[in-house]
Image 1 (cartoon, rainbow, N blue to C red):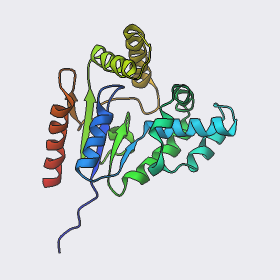
Image 2: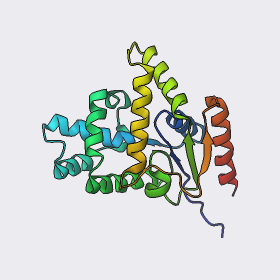
Image 3: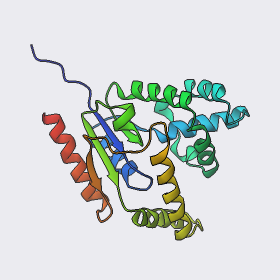
Image 4: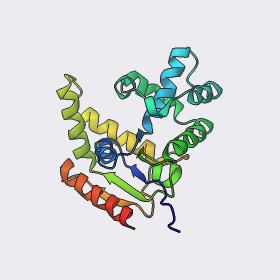
Length: 213
């Protein structure tokens, strides 16, 4: 009797503007897998709390909002709003909310998925068949974000963006609950001097190797 293969889960972690989101979306298309940007789940909770007109420090309300989410139908464009992002940073520190969202994220990944976040390989999907940690130097990431903002008609300065990225890195890496860190068995992909196509091919090779195993 041939053993049935487990659904393929690809865990991708890394700091802001490292290219992990673009990489994750391309891998999901390449391997025909559902894709979840777990950061959007916190934004969706914050957005729902704002619509419900409840305080952003109300953890009970936050958990109720989380339980109403459809993780397969998150609107990236809507949830990318700066104000929602600011609100999300406030709700994301709630331990009980994080525990609730982790369970929802695990349920999403259980049938196979590409998962993109800060704690996928360490907390959400520690048994994922493929773990990638995608990073880049802060200056390179700030330059990418600056160009993205400028392309959309924004006016943020490079120095402001660099400062924000460094502050976010510090916040993500030093928080007591689910800090950003590379899982011991994750493959490191440093995109500082790498274009997205090169990064994608490197990641695709690692996924194919896992499938063959």
